[in-house]
Amino acid sequence: MAEVYPINSFSPNTRIPIEDDESHPHVITISPEESSTEANSANPIEAWLPLTESREGNLWTCVFHLISSGIGVQALLLPVAFASLGWAWGTICLSLGFIWQLYTIWVLVQLHESVPGTRYSRFLQLSMAAFGPKLGKLLALFPVMYLSGASCVVLIINGGKAMELFFNEVRGTSSSALTGVEWFLVFTAMAILMAQAPNLNSVAGFSLVAAITGIAYCTFLWALPVAKGRVSDADYGSPSSANESGMGRMSDVLNGIGIIMLSFRGHNLILEIQGTLPSGQKIQSRKTMWRAVMISYAIVMIILFPLAIAGFWAYGNKVPSSGGMLKAFSSFHGSSTSKPLKGLIYLLLLVNCLTSYPIYAMPVFDNLELSLISQKKNNKPCSRLVRACSRLFFGGVTFFIAVTFPFLPSLAPLIGAVALPLTLAYPCLMWIAMKMKVKKSAPNTDCKSGGDVAVWGLNLLLGSLGMALCVLLVVGAVWSLADKGLHANFFKPE
Image (cartoon, rainbow, N blue to C red; front, side):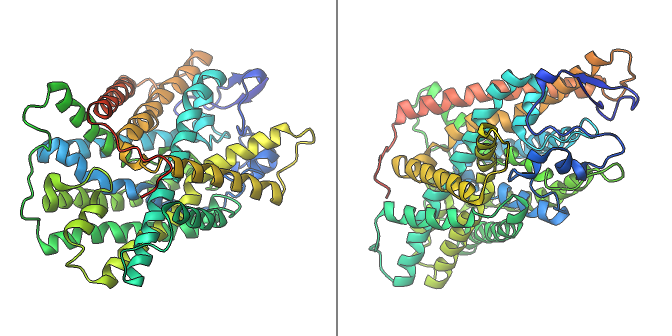
């Protein structure tokens, strides 16, 4: 039987027993006197895996990671959400969604070291600790891997198209030298080459480039339309027809909310980013991580809100549901924009997609290597060749999915709905589960702050609302697809 210390709000003299058969992968249990920066030596497997191989991160590397995961191509669809929700409800939903997801990030940051001496450096690991090994894995494994893999697939699709647009702009022709599949292949080859960086901390430079390029092209895409003026026939009413059924209108509203939720992706990377920080008795990683969150998400807010509001002002409900602001800009203002400026926007988007790919792929790389290590009898780290081959395999899988489903970005409401529990519900429910375990293990412990009724009630309310909203959004997205259809161009990237 191992012993770990409880959540900080409880007495430091109380310990929580954890049965050996309930141990979790990657959990590090060390003595109170031992700094958690020494955790890798206490558990060698931690030093072999990409997410925790290096714990030499700092405030600014976390800021770079958080901005690059918080700003991306998914933000270009925000005006589409406003077209379904309208000015008032669009602004309200975007504001509430931002505050809600910021609170759940705070919860995850606190839960990362909720047991002193133990670091939960992976979303899946925390889920297993909170809900139990079987249920936790069942609830979190698919959404985490799905969100990471789907993000990489979308990056291939958008990055391949951006590469094509950039080279066509440079060549001064509308005809492409390569097919859509070939552009995807070139992009994937470059992305996998960049993804050979050994661990998450080593791609901090890529995150910095991704953050800068993401901020730049998002700013260009809302500032230029504002400078040039809104389109003459922009309409700010719902694009739905007047005789549309009530269920059809409701599905449009739910799809708009789903797009907003998708713009706040990245919760499957919060614990992983925090895991790159050193931590000890005097300075815990949560303090540095929360400072990084406040800095990065202030920047994210400054970028996302003008993009949504100014984009809807400029184009109204003319914003295409597939492509969002980029396609609207090309259609309505492309001819009046200089070629160098258009080429710069496409290049920024391309570089952003390339440098974001390794960041979103790291959780999958980590899981793949853990599976390979667990199958080895001698329990040794993966060699460079095995690591390179596993990442090449993942690149091949994402390339195949991108070619098979090149219309995946048009499924943004459905993707956002499926990934929503990771953002809005699971963190709150995991907080409750972890507190209940501590209370059950130490019923006589003073738990004044942990038993705060308001905090318990808030987490229970938000967790329940998050799960209910997830179900509604999935139903709305499926209904919309069944009602309006889908341009499913299988194996035919355009």
